[in-house]
Length: 85
Image 1: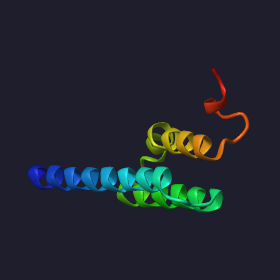
Image 2: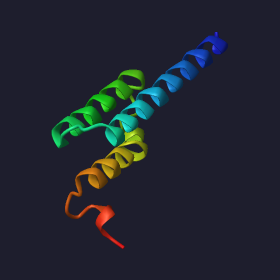
Image 3: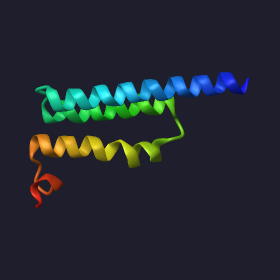
Image 4: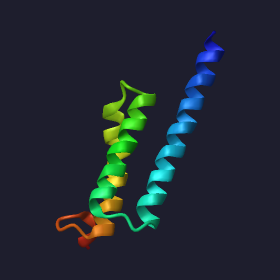
């Protein structure tokens, strides 16, 4: 039984990595508008929480900053880290 749970957890982790990697690629390589980029970020979070419902704080700690950095750099949002030396 534990082996089945472990395999299922590994499958969900692989799926999450794929979703996040794909979202990052789309954000960096496509011509999305700012609103479309924010929507993609929100939909990615929903997908992640669908896989790991009790891990929103982990998502906010690990993935949200990565997406925010990409969006800030892409759209040159004032006050973003990309404008600092």
